[in-house]
Image 1: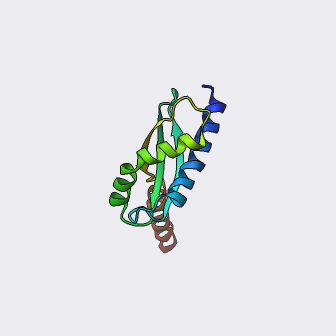
Image 2: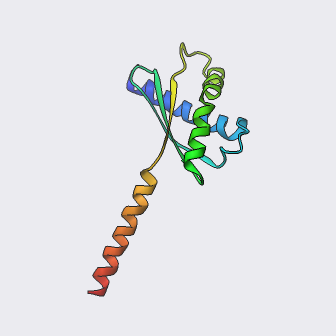
Length: 116
């Protein structure tokens, strides 16, 4: 699979998974989930999905992993031309948290510079 095809698939999977989670999943532990990114392996067998939760990350991630078989089955309905649907691996996106920490450090540095 070339780079363009892989990126198109990643984008499609990102949209479809977000739609499935937000519209079809009725689990009370999975609320306010933001699907940030999806990365497909080179051979197309694994799909890492980066998610962000507003609250109770650990329990929500566990609930999401419990229903990944259902999500994979629903993906098969969207991507009917695919020979195989990739194994889904959900991970918490920590980039935004790291960005907030860096932002706070930069504000501290600017505050110290102003005081000097």
